[in-house]
Length: 113
Image (cartoon, one colour):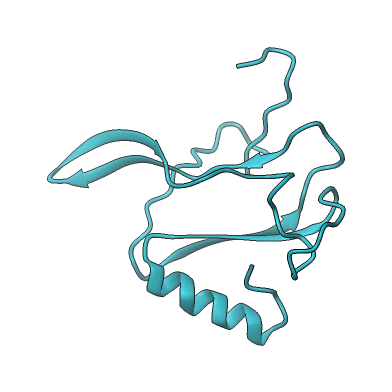
């Protein structure tokens, strides 16, 4: 890691374990603001371990990183100021759950993209 870089997590308390187990009928939904202007921001979700009888450490990214160049903060995909902007990031273990949450978000005015 770049020793001069500022790294952050979803938690302010570094004593809190931010690993979470979610079932197929659960989701993690982050509502907040993107950070202030920076050279780079990124949100990446990881699978840290799986449990099939015994726990096995995986430590793999679950997809492409959402960053300041590809994050959609305007709702229609048009270029916009990505810093200090409203953002909603949804993580699920199941596509059907994600689709249900995205549909629910649309009904309350949160864009699905």
